Amino acid sequence: MSTTHSLRERLAVLRGSTTASRPMDARALAALAANPGCKRRAVMDAAGVDKGAVAEALGSPARFGQSRFAFSRGHAFEARVKADGCAELLRLLGSEGKASLPDLSAPGPEGRVARTRMALAEAVPGEWTLLDHPLLALDVAGSTVHLEPDAVVIAPDGTWIVVEIKSFPILDGGADAMKVGAAARQSAVYVLALDAVDPGRTRADILLVCPKDFSNLPTADRVDIRKQLAVTRRQLTRLTRISDITDLLPEGTTFDLSYTPDGRTPTRPRAELAAAVDTVPAAYAPECLSTCELAFHCRDRSRAAGRVEALGRSLRGELGDLTTVEAVLAAAHGRAGDPRDPAVAALRRAAALREEAMSAAAEAAPGPAGDDANAPTAAQVPARAPARPPAPRAPAATTAATAAEQPAAGAGRVPGGPA
Image (cartoon, rainbow, N blue to C red):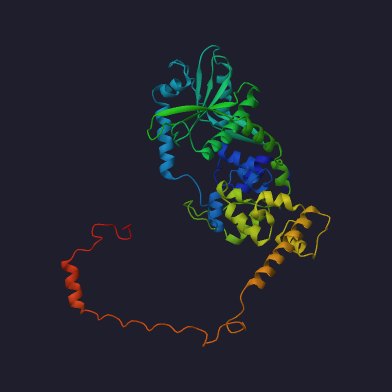
């Protein structure tokens, strides 16, 4: 792609000049940080491409996502937490209902980011200050990403606290570990964005607000995210710069779906769209199935190419230079590979053990009927006792009448239930 255009213009061409940009959120950025080698996701997220719509047009729709019920429940719970001037949230913080709530409204994302920075700088020392849905900016691989946490609190000691509001419950003091981990990774992105404003001011423990037990009453707990913060920071530094990726794309590459005038039906041929998507290298792993809308398309491509990444990152790391299933089988059967390579030696040892087990199983299996010389003859088989004659059957009418007069022993039980 030509380098004469600015990065923003090149990303607009990739997205489609008439297609609205889909902003990247903290959840998407955390998923990208978990797979920093995927250039396809990096450039499509930076361009604001709707990966779900692209997957639908490719015939490989994503099978995950938040249901409408969960989405509505989350919004309703957050509204309750922030009702009456964020009274419940201030109670959970222990501020006794006393906190300043600055107005963060401003035109455009740049204006909101500037207003958030101003509110952080103007917080009065010794008092609580609560920022409701501030907008933060974070540079990711040379592209600016705008992030909007649920809330950021400035404590009286001057430290900043990230507040994450989730609708999954805390039952008997504990919550789903996977959901808490996802919230921690998402919050780590917010902490990185706040560190870009003033390093070291943000606490490494966030305030996670959830419903208590099976009620809708808010409760909160502190979550230490130091581990997630270190991992996310390291992974984001490994991302290839977006401009370096776009510079290698063919001229005219675009993921535009060419919608009809009503904006509902894509008209771009599937083969043409698939060719455009395949121009950007992907790094598929089974973990992508729960975080990326294009995962099923990438999995199909990975399987068709016989790449070992489709079997998992851990296995891929153990196989070293063997990157395809064909190469793995060739090394296991001695047709290729350096026997001094630990991966090749392990594969050949595994193949030898399998062959040994298969041979032992074949020898232990009985031969076909009639081939065993030791099989007993007809004279050696003891005679069977004659079968008893069947009892006379009652006429159908009599049987039906008897069944109607006598209640069944299992009457009242659920069909198929225990006796």
